[in-house]
Length: 369
Image (cartoon, rainbow, N blue to C red; front, side, top):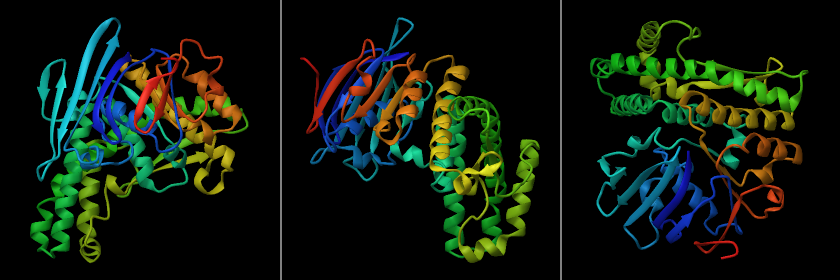
C-alpha cells in the first residue's frame, strides 16, 4: 500500500495543499517551524489514529478558521481507496465527518486498518527514559492499528476510569463507587491481555533488530509490568478476578488518593538489556539501539500480521541518530513508502525514485517544479 496523493485545507499552518507522492521515499525539507511535521501529522490522521503530538481537534484548525479537511488517495495492489476527514470546531463539541470510499462514518476509528502507518518522532527516542505513559502509548497505538476493536475496549476502559475518579473526588459512597468496579475489571483485563499477547509477537522482531545493531554479546527483552497481578499468563477471566480483588481490598487507598490506583492505565513495559533495566543501567548508545529496535519491530509486526507494508513516517529522527544507526534504519525501511522530514537531504543522495518537497511558511512545492 502507498499514499498516491493528499489534499489538506486549513490544517495548522497549511492553508491549502495538494500533493502527489512517490511510492518510495518522500523527503520533506525545510527549516524549523515551517510546517514539515504538520504535513506528517495530517497524513498520520488518515490512519484513524489520534495526533501523534497529542493535539485535540481544536488545535489542528488554522488560525481564524473553524474547519479543517484532509483527504488521501491510496493504492493497494492497483486498487484505489479514498479516505477523507472533515472537522468543524465551531460548536461546543467538534463535529467530525469521515468518509471511506464514499461511505460516511461517525468516527475516524473507521479508518483504522484501512491505511496502515507507523510514525517515528524524536519523542519516541525517549521511550526508555520517559515515564510509563510513553511506553503504554507505544503499545496501544500499535494495537489500535492492528485490531480496531481494541480501540473501543481501551476507550470504554478509560471512560470508566474517568467516571470512577469523578465519584472518588466527589466522595460518593462505597456502594456507588463499587458499581463500576466489575466493569472496570472486565475491560481492564481485556486491555492487559491484549497488550501481553501482542508483546509476545513483538519481542522477537525487536530482539532481531537489536542483535543486528548490538551484536551477540548483548540481548534485549521486554516485560509487561501489571499493577494488579504479577502473573499475566493466566486467563482473561482470572485477570479480571485478580483486578477486582485488588481494587476491592484497596478501596480506602483509592478513596484517600481520590483516583484509581490500579489497572492498565498504571501499567508499564520494562525494557531489559543483558537482564538489567535499560532505563537505569544501559548506556545512551544501548538505549538508542533498543528504541530503534522497538520502532522497527512495530513496522515489521504490522507487515507480518496485516499482510500490508505500512507507510513509514519519520519526523526529524535522523538528526538524533549516529551514522551507523542512520544507515541501519534506512536499510530496514527501503521496501516501504517513506515520508521523512529533515533540514538537509545528503543522506538520501543514493536513494532511488525519491521525491523532494520544500516547505516554507506552510507552503509546499515539489523540488524542481
